[in-house]
Image (cartoon, rainbow, N blue to C red; front, side, top):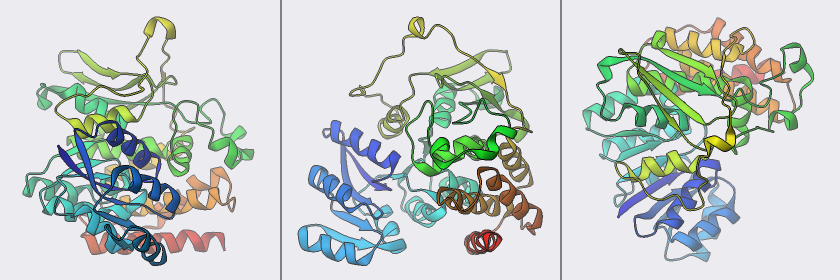
Length: 381
């Protein structure tokens, strides 16, 4: 029985994690969770899984829930995230929150020796050097939940990492993969949220459309697998059947395949090193699919991906600036305050103006994150 703390229980990854826990009550126990403002969904999870500790975003929601569930402890805010992550009974932390808010709680959980199942790209992008250093210090496993990194992790099982030639991350291309840059000028939020393959949250779906999502994953792969950027490639693959590949010195290529279903990598991270049957999962039928398609990435077309590579190679606080600028710009686009192409323009402007600090500490990372968001907001004004 693995005891789980879950950050971001009412988000896309969180809901799918809850589904796995609900279907495997003999294997997993949810002892602590955090959610945002979706109190109805929080109540549903509480009723089904009976956690010991629940954190919500607003204090008034915590007080109301405490009246309804007197046998459960409630907390709120940033402090609540840390409390959930460091719950004394849990052995595994699933970090499924959006954005850089998951950083402090993840570091706190590592220092308690908990296994980290990470679905939060921003934690590794902005502070990968801190997270991995702490993981090594406390002998903690960092298990990837992203489908691409899970695929790489699985394709490296039993292999010598020194014999890897390159990592190849596949990308669907997102909602606008067949559009030219000229055709992107008039796209709407509704258009951008219509992903052809995956069911994901709004922010990640927009990131997929800009390909910043893949850029963050490239940086994440660099951090998780200690691989130089020149050995990390991106390949367009619109079916999302091959989730990523690893090429070795002898020209062998090992890939992980499956139908597009985020529950597969989530469940693998929870059950590792074992595998469990996936309730309601669709088996891959290659004969039925017939063909798979691949295409090189055009970095002029997908400028956000190039910006991510640039930031990754530079390292330091520019990674935080790039990530915060992206988060802030995507939020503005979802609020229909800027156009789709302005997301990239804002990120590039922030990166060009940023005074980079190599090996930033946590205080510096949080400061750069905060100041960058203010800068992006001022661009609109």
